[in-house]
Amino acid sequence: MKRTPLFALVGLILVAPFIKAVAGETNHNFGQWEKEIAAFEASDRTNPPPKHAILFTGSSMIRKWTSLAQTFPTQTLVRRGVGGCEIVDITHFADRIVFPYEPKMIFLRAGGNDIANGKSPEEVFNDYQDFVKTIHAKLPDTEIIFIGWNATPLRWAQHEKEDTLNRMVRDFTAQTPHLQYCKTSDMVLDQDGKPRKGLFESDRLHFNAEGYKLLAERVQPFLPK
Image (tube, rainbow, N blue to C red; front, side):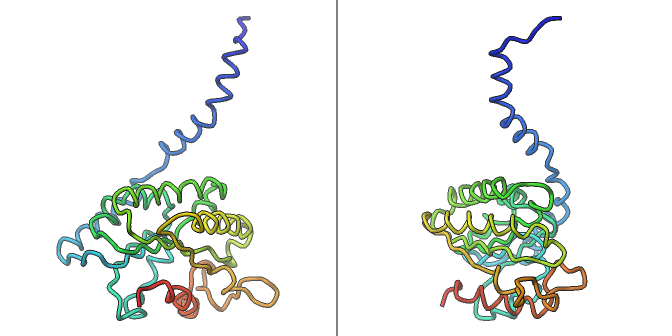
């Protein structure tokens, strides 16, 4: 039987992580969000959003925050939430749902689905860094505020991974210009350190009105005066 040379085996070991990363990115189904992205574009054509506004983007917490404009009536806001998405999706579609608005400030809430789909906190953090690089390559002065993760009853099993992601983003923020971190992890916890069920919808994952009220209080200090 023909043996594989030792140097070839070493080479495969060294490139395996790269192959895995590329394969994972290739296999990611960006097309599943095409209908939602196209709907945003259609809305933009008939009712163009103002430029240099404050953009809220990310996954379902943003998509379901339908009271956002009423919550902050003195601010000029654009809301572009894609339910179920990961950070890589927002980065991928930035040319269509971020850059056209030339936002002066971006609030991003995404990453929880990434962990639920099997990514490690380190992988999600790397995706966040890519998002920051992508945005600041074209909008170097735009402030990016990462809305940190909070535990939920449904995904309690992953709350430690979410906390790890929060710490990585917070530390990165402390040493990177035009980044801010909005902490939310403590606002949902009861005296036993568990998420309060009264802040969530029946699915035990998404905020109800009371949950959004607490979130608004955390977001408020980051908005322009």
